[in-house]
Image (tube, rainbow, N blue to C red; front, top):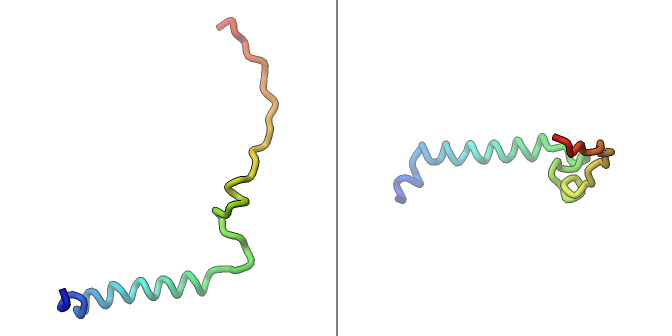
Length: 57
């Protein structure tokens, strides 16, 4: 297990995650709220008028 953790394959794999994390943090715009914030999820649905139901079907 220790040999795998020191292997070049594992270090490159881990390095990809580090580079990806740095990229996400660097490119994240801090002014816009996240898409799945509590206020966006809890937003009320628009009320639509319902057509009368025809029960003769």
